View (tube, rainbow, N blue to C red):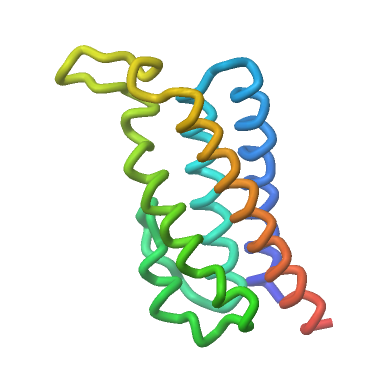
Length: 144
């Protein structure tokens, strides 16, 4: 039961990031939308791992762990593992440049992250959050 409480807390934080990412996108702050979307995906995946009793590594991209333990997930969630892994990997790669830009080339975050990057990031974060929230809710319901 305690694991579900922690998982739900991670999802609350992920949902807040998702909301803020949407607002950042609407205000054309594309690098910030990408950064917040990455955090949403990270927190959502960590919520799922916690909900199934996995102590995840303290890194930003936990997608490889998802693949290792996919047998713990229902079939509908397993069908989305590749999307979840891909989203995590893509957004972790954009994490640093969304904050610092291309420092070696003296590029600002706005010069390396554009509207398409942000739109894709927010969509990935939204789907990831929704899938993870659904799974945690199912797990919670099953333990009532």
